[in-house]
Length: 163
Length: 148
Image 1 (spheres, helix red, strand yellow):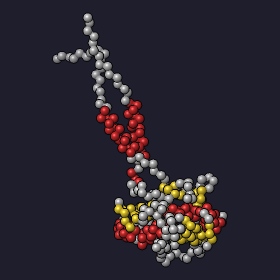
Image 2 (cartoon, chains in turn green, purple):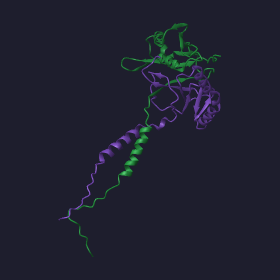
Image 3 (cartoon, chains in turn purple, orange):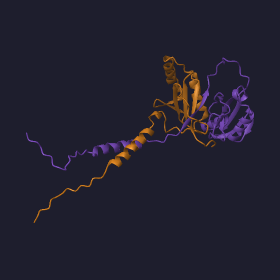
Image 4 (cartoon, chains in turn orange, blue):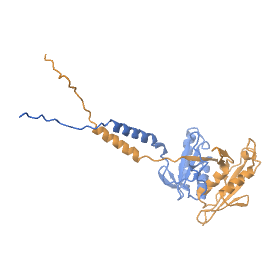
């Protein structure tokens, strides 16, 4: 049997074909770059609104604070009213709610049981409703913590669309 | 005259750093790719609120309803008027009851366009209430801009 002589100082190098792998890798990269989308953080305002039915629990002692939002013909905000009192902005609404609630925030306080009924015009843009809910439901303090005000929300029966 | 030997001179670049970087980029984009947001549509521009925080725990049996500014609801890839939602909502209710859940425990996530008339949002809520849904999550974008 002949034994192959190996040439001294030479090494057999097996070269891998890189081209197909790089092709695929770039295709993958292009796919992920194209489908990339910056996701904006979304949050919820949780509202529990059962259909109008006789309530099972004891009747509530407090009447809801009625917040009236009026719209102009274009659906923009035309006025804010709390119990008949006109307010100029959502900031004023926020301050009004805070003054109504006072400083008592503990269990059994008025703030805990208070409820707001939103009475909005049919054609008012939804973003104004969200601004009103924001003004009613709380604020962010100096430390960046959310301080909750009124969490119980309900809507007045919807009005008829303007003809 | 001595004949000169011919040599093949090929310059090979080192591919390793490029492939390393490319794989890192792929990994980065793969991690950020969010397939779970399939129910979100670009058409809906949500209103903004500073107080909106993402839920701490996943919602119980969420039912996502995308409400456009035209007053139609994007449901299962179809644009339906609110009145036409009665049947799909009844089906959802039946499915929940079949799995021993109550529609009152499910959360209806309302993703309404910011220009939608508030009355239309109320009509949608009422339609859901008629099918015994009680919990609603009004979805908004988290933002520091609060007043228009």
